[in-house]
Amino acid sequence: MIDCETETAGAFAQVIRVGEHTFRADVGPDLGGAGSAPGPHDLFDASLAACKTLTAHWYARRAGIPLERVEAHVERDDSRERQGAYVVRVRLAFHGPMTDAQRAKLYDAVGRCPVHKLMTTTEVTIETAPL
Image 1 (cartoon, helix red, strand yellow):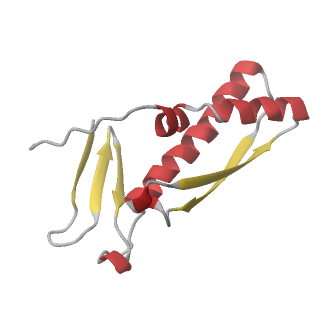
Image 2 (cartoon, rainbow, N blue to C red):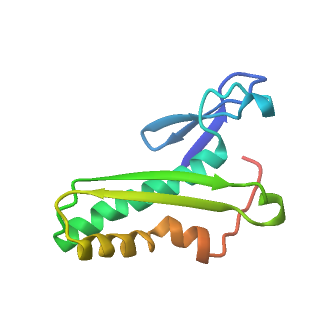
Image 3 (tube, rainbow, N blue to C red):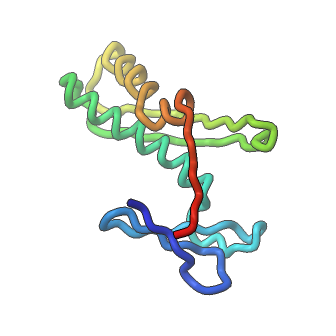
């Protein structure tokens, strides 16, 4: 379960609790917030980056690939979001003594990470109701 609530009355910043983890969300000054934490779009995009990097580690362990660490850099183009187009560019770097074939397997695996599939192939239904 995830809980989210306003941190300070009248402010935009939110406190989010996921299990034993606590983090925050806010919006930038251009939207009336303080920009004190990542915004919802940042968290959306970050979930994709985290899923891809974690999938790379999981796959590497399972396949015996000597992956030491992963870097992910995410850029988004939300200029046409209101028209139904949201582009997320994820660039990855796999570090460790791997062959080109092993790197190719990692790129294939991260292209099928659960959040990538959720964002691109799953019909999501959101139900909003009183708490």
